[in-house]
Length: 391
Ligand SMILES: *Cc1c(COP(=O)(O)O)cnc(C)c1O
Image (cartoon, rainbow, N blue to C red; front, side):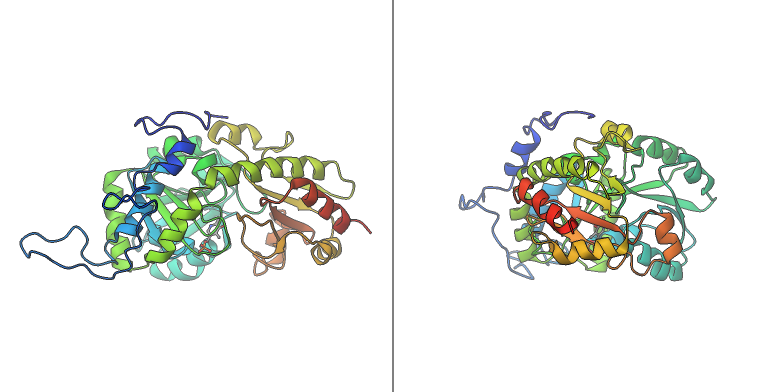
């Protein structure tokens, strides 16, 4: 692993776990209250016209949302954070940095919503995309065009957890003055901090691990450079797709336990991946922590852990469907990253609209399922899988 979770923050704010709790706004300066106050207000009184208030109108800024935005910026090691109404709102806002005539190089394993945004909306705005296998830098290089402006990365990717070498890609992208954008939803800043590897913008569906309780839809963005932060601020205010005040508060609440949840879920996922690897009839297990994972060395160079998502191939659609009908503990659903385990079936859920040949080519077979390990006892999770996989 590239460094330890326990490494001190360069600004002297303590180790990651301490920063998660003591992030700066954890005590209300005015009253000493033990949580960030909910400023449930759309507008702010001008006590003096000569001296306008710090906050003016909630779309442009709100103290509760600001506390969240500063919090994620601190955790990712960036200069500025932004909270949006969903992960897709954060992702689409980042793409608003581009203009008509620009070209994007994007990982072919990108989240389905991002794929739809690029191929059915941004294409109409004159933004063109080439999808490549980002585990292969040669494919990335070959996709370069004179109008290329940005590279969009997801590592580990979904659902087969392929690994992209962040530093290698960033150093190439910088030579060509391309903006680098990374969707860090699967890892969270607890396990991976892309800005430390030179990435310009980090994005999150905070609906997943950061929120952590399947009760909230939210997106976050963090910019590395101050100038990029100013441009994102203009886009966020101009698009108006900000996160509401109550949801900002709820997300802060969820994020405080990020380390405790990630640590336990990751431990469970490691155990689950090992167990699955020894099961007859399981054709393939995808988890970056397994010794036979092709991207393991690269992942270890750039990350602090392997995450809580394990995908595996049960061998056939029939077997997968039987498993889904017999399983007891996890929620059978799309989404991931919650206190409860979530089992999804990509072929019929997240990747149902993908042409079958393309799906199979990417390893998303009819037998593939994705397990997001929650906080249940891992031995119960394994026992439940054992009964559901049995005859
Ligand atoms: C869920 C998800 C998104 C989209 O986020 P929403 O909050 O659902 O809009 C984007 N990227 C990844 C990797 C995701 O898992």
